[in-house]
Length: 293
Image (cartoon, rainbow, N blue to C red; front, side):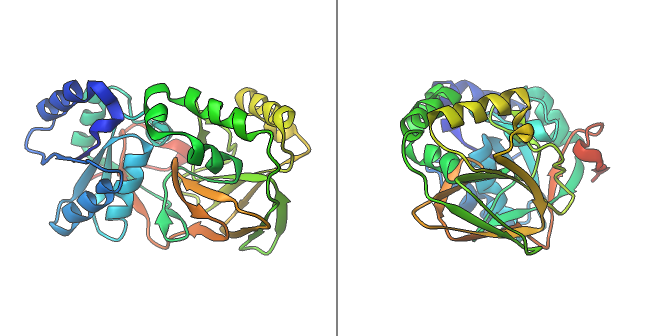
């Protein structure tokens, strides 16, 4: 198990004790820096562990996934972070005891493994505004205040002029906008089911491309995302594709699963191999099936 104590701040000691009490016989490795999760997970996979558990938020899960992606290990999730979108997507319960029962039962599902450049992700990639918010939000502020911290950064960014982003899908269609969200599942943010047709194992990326910008436009988009009316907006485009390339006329950052990875240009697609994830037996988001192992 790869445990990120920073995911629970001052509560880390109590959460650590809970995890140790639950995980009889499991090796628990703690991260000290954000990059540790990938290294520790890769080490566990190389040593032959069949299941590597990410105990943290979406950023910790991302690190663990990048550590085991090229191995035969499967992913388990204990959702103890600020944002737990991936766990919500797959129906993994938020209570530690219930989440551990899911891992112990061992039912799994193979899902798509998207990538952005050289980095794999499981839930979401953001280009432009979303990634700029991640870039300008202090990690400590984010940990202590959660979604509120992002709103503070968003308010500061909304008045700037954004670069034009150009996207070309693998199918050959071309699109333009000011920022984009790319999903492997339905959820973003609160979590909000903003990607209407997304299924984690359908071999497709779901893309939302926004053409407007500015304080009023962004407020309108946020209201649309919250109330589910964003797909009715004429300046919001929703598409599905097997992969895409993105470039911009100015600097545009990119984030995956809430972690900044660089700037455009970038290629985003789905890897040939899949990611095996331990999920609840009765839960199969998007119609897939869980198998015992």
